View 1: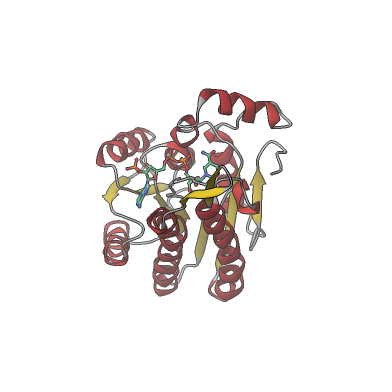
View 2 (view 1 turned 135 degrees about the horizontal axis):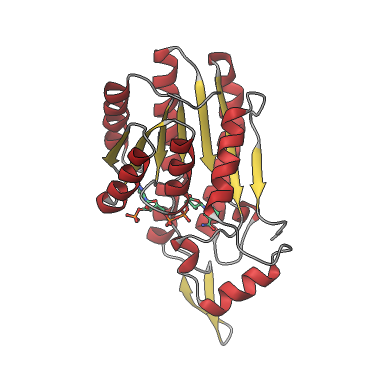
Length: 253
Ligand code: NAP
């Protein structure tokens, strides 16, 4: 896909990886529909995209709320007249052990609400983004690309029952949709980042962050621009389909 003049929707675009991907695609001439919960972050990213000379609009919406997503996708198509790419990027962390044990006795369990919050945003949010994008792309009749953001943690990371389950689900959805949607000219791929320097990772304790960076074969965290470069590659290479691209400095968990 040539990106110039195409319309790209990115969820979680108010900061971090979403903001970096928006900037990279704006630099390649794509118009941006930016979705996030945070209006201030969105406005800063929108203005930066516009300075690249492309059209950019901001949409405040919760990826886990079906009605908000349906109406936002309607607005995007009305505003831009097309939808070529959807990047399902919004995600949250609510880490916790399955059970906490003290002196041989379970003293705490992972609360259902903590499980559900992550499943709602990181898995249901991706489902709604992909479903609404596919419907619009098929109706518009010009094909397109869906890119889901999974994670290295999909392999099963200590303290991340909710996050690992959601990100494994995102990888599986990617394969299902690639098979189902290819007949409509829609390619579906995922990126599974390792530890990338964003606010999500900055919330980790400094000593744990330093230990984590040292455990990565390349001896450093990834940069948001390195995920944005991967997104551009996937979009521009029309033979990429149904794959999860692991961008993690060689780390394994
Ligand atoms: P981030 O810095 O925390 O940014 C996430 C953005 O998503 C925030 O702007 C946040 O808005 C927004 N968001 C959260 N919940 C939302 C919802 N329900 N609806 C709409 N927007 C919502 O995270 P990031 O590091 O850029 O991560 C982006 C994606 O990459 C996530 O899916 C994450 O799991 C994945 N990932 C990140 C890393 C990493 O190392 N950074 C590694 C692997 C995978 P608010 O600020 O208002 O909450």
